[in-house]
Image 1 (cartoon, helix red, strand yellow):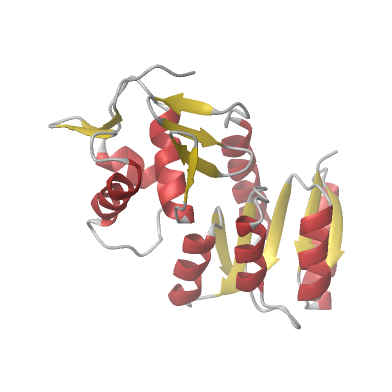
Image 2 (cartoon, rainbow, N blue to C red; image 1 turned 60 degrees about the vertical axis):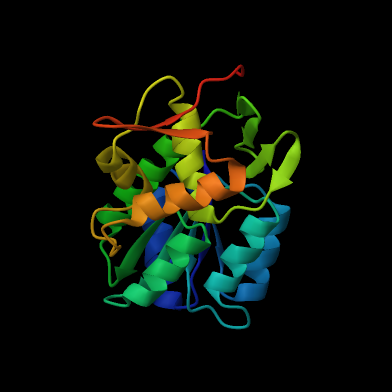
Amino acid sequence: MMRLLLAEDDPLIARDVTAQLTKAGFNVVHESDGEATLFAGEHDDFAAVVLDLGLPKIDGLTILKKWRSNGRDMPVIILTARGNWEERVEGINAGADDYLGKPFRIAELLARLHAVLRRYSGHASAILSSGPVSIDPRRRAVMVDGMPVDVTPMEYKCLLVLMQNRGRAISQLELTEQLYTQDFERESNSVEVLIGRLRKKIGRDTIVTRRGFGYQIASGEGT
């Protein structure tokens, strides 16, 4: 049975969500404030986290940033106020895997949970390498010639997709679909901006543009 952390301070929502997730086969651990949530995520292992951004004591966005900076890589779905796109943008940029606006239906939460769990299970735990660039999915770490490189959560996601598809070009549309949820508000050139920032950090020749096909990690020895 998969263990899931539910961080929600509304007792009625927490009760109903816990009951439905338990019925769906999850072992739910519920925390109602930010301090307890931060501690649980740092010191215990969970298959996924459902994280309300409006927690007392420590807000959910701060918690998520601390988890990611400390290498905690479990899938996280954030809960936000319906229509608050600024929170959604901040959450995704901080390393959230998906988001859901309140109020929500349990069926949609379950669908999103299963989707992020499928994506996560498809990530190899072994270090991926191509030429001088290596990426460690378990630690969400990027290295060039063995030296750590500081990347944002979205830059990491973009590089991970490219590394997992070494040997073929990924179109801009495919990258967009893998990096962003369908209703996530973004600039039309978001992918180009990410690629440009990555090239500055890991080397301009590391990511090749194949005109008419998309972006591809340059060939190099690696696993």
